[in-house]
Length: 302
Image 1 (cartoon, rainbow, N blue to C red):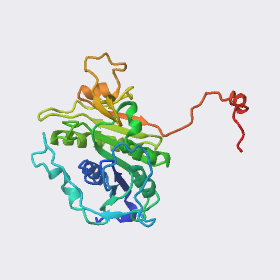
Image 2 (cartoon, helix red, strand yellow):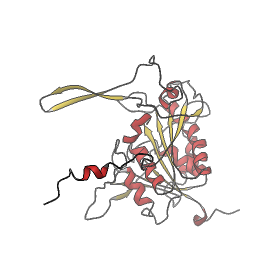
Image 3 (tube, rainbow, N blue to C red):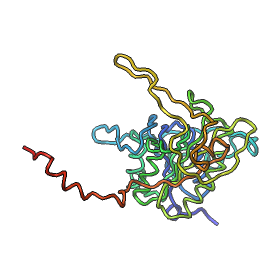
Image 4 (cartoon, helix red, strand yellow):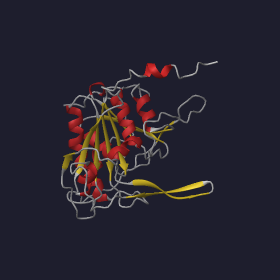
């Protein structure tokens, strides 16, 4: 049997908010290639962490800067990864061909998604959007601020299947993901992607994988609720003349969790978690009848 014609293969758009040099992109590329997709990576040319769903671009004479680059490939470690690069051999063989293009884009992650869904990167419209794998977990209600999640939710708004994936880091200072953790991410991304492809695009699947030390193994993959707060909480640490110094802290592990099935609790126990996130929508059941009473209090223009 000969190769599958391009027009019959589905297309995956892969992006992130860590920038095109983020090593997590390769995990999503490999999962997509294994699932039979052609892949176009269209990721920000620089770190856009915390961009949420912002749609901004660094236009040059009304043109969006797009540069073809090489994809960074992380090493994986742990059981089944005696050769730390064997996991990516199939995808590596496609790099530089029409089946795998890697582009650095002067834009936010959600902008990459938005224009990608209009065929900006090669003329084809993606069948699925994969965002990540983020260096650092995106949990709780703090997902609102994530560029990784924002890019995926943008696809959901347009009725396209989407997955956002994030990995725990060894240190919040360096944001480095351990080779053992990368291996666990790939283990979790595969079934997560299958779930996304098997279901209607009514929401974004948000996948998180905890940091694993050498020798540790993932407990498994579980559905989870969103915690009230994320893994790290920001605080104003010190205020002075003309500045505020901020810090982030992790809630104490001995705190009684509000929801034992939340993402932050399960991740702390060594589970990967999956949560379906909905797009922005109006709130039903809230009466606005008294707005008419307030209208007279608003001064007329002019």
